[in-house]
Length: 78
Image (tube, rainbow, N blue to C red; front, side, top):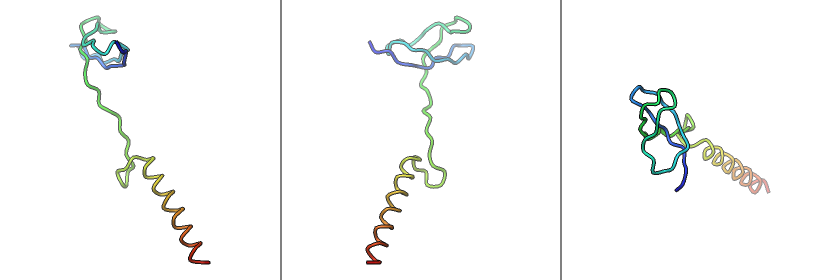
């Protein structure tokens, strides 16, 4: 069985993550020792503020565009 990190929450609302087998659905709470159920975590996604693209994609597009403009200006000057 593969071990993965999952988030768990108990009936008292204690939230924690734990490295467990992927089939495990419940575990004792680290704080109060009550049964904690596995929950689906919200993914963390960071988008660029203006375009809504991922930061790496926006920076890559800008770099390629600048290179293309530089090449076009150079060939127009020749």
